[in-house]
Amino acid sequence: MARARARTNSAARVLAMMAVQLWVMLRSVEAATYMVGDATGWTNTANGGASFYSSWASSKTFKVGDILVFNFVSGQHDVSVASESDFSSCGTSNTITFLTTPPVNYTLTTNGIVYFICTHDSHCSQGQKLSVTVGTGSGPTTTPPSSTTSPPPNSSTGSTYVSGGVMFISMAVCLLTMW
Ligand SMILES: [Cu+2]
Image (cartoon, rainbow, N blue to C red; front, side):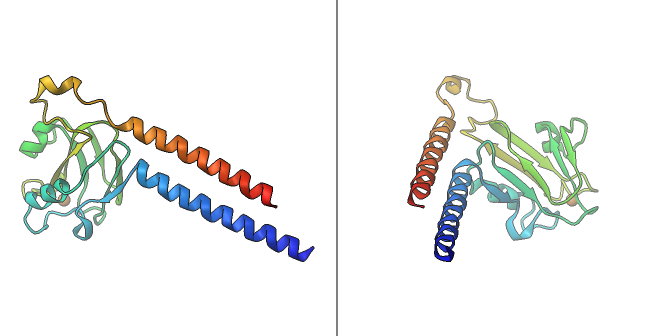
């Protein structure tokens, strides 16, 4: 009786561990979370100013579903999702979304370039601005001939997800029949 229960417990634990591992695996395929500026965070005092954030972004490949985390002290900065012109001029006339409560988690929802600035004082002109290219990023609409060349590689993500699910179900059935 006790032994049977112990076996059930350990099987359940294995199953739970496998579920967690699978979840982690799928998450890594599915979406990534990026801490903007890494340890530096979202600030106007980053070493290098605007080039700090552009080089931070250039070392990464962003895709739809990825999450950007902007870490800053509440009230000292903000995150304004800006138009391209506002990004260039550090203006606020065409703000798309304005987020003030840290940490700001921003999910990338479409392919293309997303612009972020801080609207506090002159932080943006001091370099607190970030542009992120999501997906294949065929540039800032300067390459019209390539518009038909890039079916987004999302289909592979979908099939990975499905096969992962099938794998999980078969593992679960295996374990259940072992009991
Ligand atoms: Cu700021």
